[in-house]
Image (cartoon, rainbow, N blue to C red; front, side, top):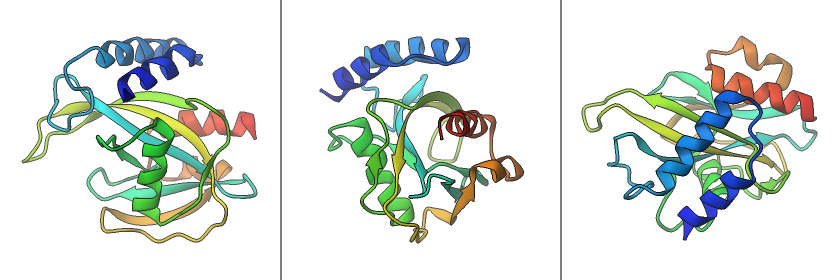
Length: 180
């Protein structure tokens, strides 16, 4: 059921460039593979859900410092079998990693898509995360990091480029700045 929901969301998504167009085609192909949500599916990888969460004034974005990857990223993680929607999976991850409750979607559908490499660890082969990204707004700015993340903070949209992050986050933040 969730694979069908993802397929529909991807079909409705308008890629912002050729790279995102290629991501969308690879994601649609993953929908038709064995189990596109299994954490043990390493060839090529599996779906994840994440969120770019705006502060109530829409001037800042919520970022976490990811322990394993050692960089500032948007909250997100693996899609679970109990997740009924992409937004729901992303909201669950935001709550787990930052304790931000009550986020609401800014818009229907996907905000961004990305496929990125995950390095091998002792318990997992190198693989790719097929990341489905939604845009949320938080009701307030109270946060608390859980044990999966080193830190959580609100960052002004104009200041994200000064952090240790990656191009996929910077690309999404450029989209955000054009929209808000």
